[in-house]
Structure formats: C-alpha cells, structure tokens
Length: 125
Image (spheres, rainbow, N blue to C red):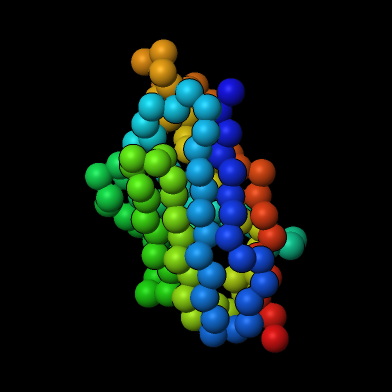
C-alpha cells in the first residue's frame, strides 16, 4: 500500500511563507517524477510545480519566482517552499506521483496515479 501524506502550515498572512512536505510511504523504491497541485474553491485542480528525479523543475506562471519545489530522493519526500503568499494561493494542496513514475519494491511501476489526501492552505489577513 503506497501512501502520499502532505504536511506543513495551514494558515498564513499575505506576504508570508509556508513550507509543505509530502512523504511517500509503503513499498516505494523510487519516484522519478512528482508534482504539487492545488484546487481553489470553484476552480479546477491545477499544476503548481513539478520536479524530476534529477531535479529538473517546472513552475506554473502564477507561482514563478515565489514558490520553489524540491525533493529528497533518499527519503522519497517532496517539498514546496511558498514565499510571498497571496490570498489567491488559498487552496487545497495535493502532491502527486503519476502512473508509471512510482517504482515499487517488486520492480514494477505503480500503474495508477498516486495522490495525497490534500490539505487546506489559507492565506488571509
């Protein structure tokens, strides 16, 4: 059973910072691609940032220069440093490992998307 579990602060004022973590547990050997997504009320889920196992990153235009994605491959943990937060950053945040990118102890990749349960992050004064 593979689980992705997000953690980190849940409330911050505009201009502040939060650091999110996502730890993979279970029979996970490696994950060669991971991403952070968010879903604001009344909106579709959107990509925030993504990172390969080698550390190549891609950030959504809305967060460029403010957010930074990183990972610790030895711990199969994903991070998102969010700086200069804005009220529009309020959303439920999810971490994701797409199908075929999370490798199990069996040697085979998991054939379905893996998602964390999501957690609310609110930016408000």
